[in-house]
Amino acid sequence: MSSPILVIGALGNVGAEVVKQILARGGIVRVADRDVNKLKERFGEAVEAVRFDFTDRSTYEETFRGVKRMFYMRPPHITNIQRDMVPSMDAAKRAGVTHVVFLSLIGIENTKYVPHYKVESYLKEINVQTTFLRCSFFMQNLNTTHRREIRERNEIFVPVGKAKTAFIDARDIGAVAAVVLLEDGHAGRNYDLTGSERLDYWEAANIMSEVLRRRITYRNPNPLNFFIETIHRGTSFMFALVMTGLYTSTRFGMADPMTDEVERLTGRKPILFRQYVMDYKDAWM
Ligand SMILES: NC(=O)c1ccc[n+]([C@@H]2O[C@H](COP(=O)([O-])OP(=O)(O)OC[C@H]3O[C@@H](n4cnc5c(N)ncnc54)[C@H](OP(=O)(O)O)[C@@H]3O)[C@@H](O)[C@H]2O)c1
Image (spheres, rainbow, N blue to C red):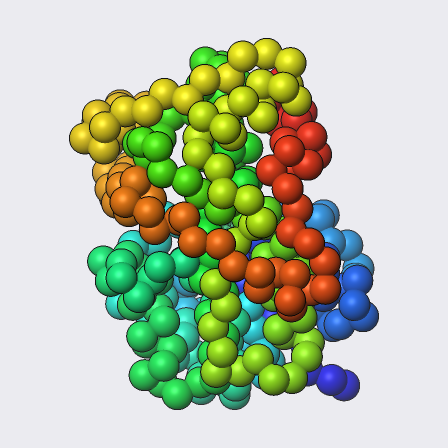
């Protein structure tokens, strides 16, 4: 039997798209996440589902057995890489995984304080072949992390000032990951993935207003106020800190570069922000 492609975080924004795209291209997939019942509900019989928890080593053997290629990601709340991710990278290497496609962050070379930097460095240290998908900000942040403030307050609340962001749709990342995992020639390469338009948050709010037919505004706090209010709204200290750091880097242009890697690798143009809002509009109703 051929070796399955393992997708870690298969219930996540990107992971679920990776699974869909690999299946659409006829690949064999093993999906891994904390809740095996949800995996079965979501993907049915088309995949093999295993329970995997970064923090529970007893789940590693079944997850990595017989796998050569895997999609690997860091759940957003995990900040202690040494404690919570290094053991699974070691286990994957021991089990014979040879190529890891890791969901990383654009501009990572200059943002060494973010956890992805440590993951990239460790994967190189243990000598597995890697492809780092260094992505810009996901459009899907607006229907997940920022969903409530948009739905209930009609505002986007991020400390980004006038900076532009070349938002990418998670569905495009899934399509690129499938290409990289199924075709040869991508090991040892890194791809900076973005959408095909650079928008500031006023422009993003205007597009949302037009599609949703109600006024969405961009509230533009300074980073300190963002940090304090985000914690008051119930976000954990560490997650608020990482978010503040990332949005502050955006404020200084980190998310501004635009590439044509999505089109080059998938053969089709990236999804536009307006299309994304149309496809997800129920999320904010
Ligand atoms: N958002 C952006 O703009 C952006 C841009 C570039 C890079 N990134 C990076 O992309 C990654 C997030 O990707 P995403 O949005 O697809 O993530 P996501 O939607 O938050 O999905 C994370 C998945 O990991 C699972 N998970 C959580 N804790 C786990 C554990 N201990 N063991 C195993 N699985 C666990 C979650 O399951 P549960 O449902 O059980 O929690 C969920 O299915 C982060 O590393 C982020 O920094 C994000």
